[in-house]
Length: 322
Image (cartoon, rainbow, N blue to C red; front, side, top):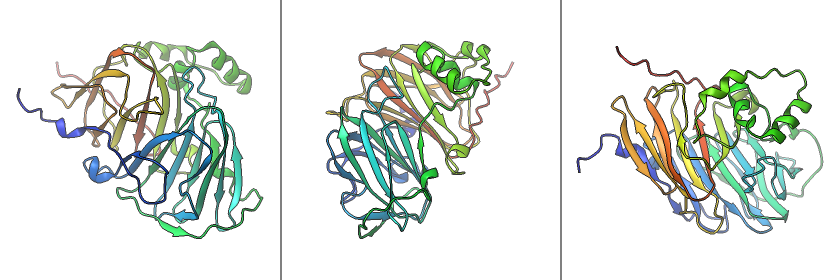
């Protein structure tokens, strides 16, 4: 079989021991060196019992911006977390508590941690995005927690906060759509966008942009998927002005190497096809054509994360030559 031109851009996610003191068990851990120089680091795993993490003792400070995401594992309800989580933020170790899927926004130089998972009803997902290729952290001694609102803006629910194309996915779920309309009575949804989505696309999805994330130069998603088929109907391939990773991850808290589906992804102007059925990251350099994406089969619900290194998400379709 001939060697594929873009094989280096499709990588099985690495399950390995995270940096000392960060998490209590092996984790999916990827830095820029593992993703063809992608200018961010990424981690993913499950929290299955009460305890402290990021870090397990003390606090941390990074020389780059970071997002810490906490989401549920019930693929029928993206608004359900199933745990109570708290985090200490700032020099004051100001404590903030949440029990819905949320992102902790950590500007560079901001002390944070530990994150404490208290009451937990079922395993939860935790992933992080650090906006530098190499993971770096300075450890700080833990301080007594304080109460306050100085850092409240840094802990935000994952959603819903959608624009039309994202709402078109949520519109498939009548309950979520009804809740959104109740919370946003003036929102007018463009139903024509629904036709752009194929049967393989998300059952439920949230998408956060830079203006949701204190101006960070990143946008990312979290979504649940069970369908098979093509993901987009609007065109064949698209590209982005900024570099991006596409992360396919499983929802089995006892097996980080399990995905539960098989994907076929086309890369480059040649539409070179790549097929995988293990947790995988596809690296898309800026301006690099990718898609179509087709789910060939699904045995179990799985998760998918887009992470693009821009506060906005521009996705022009490649115009085919006549």
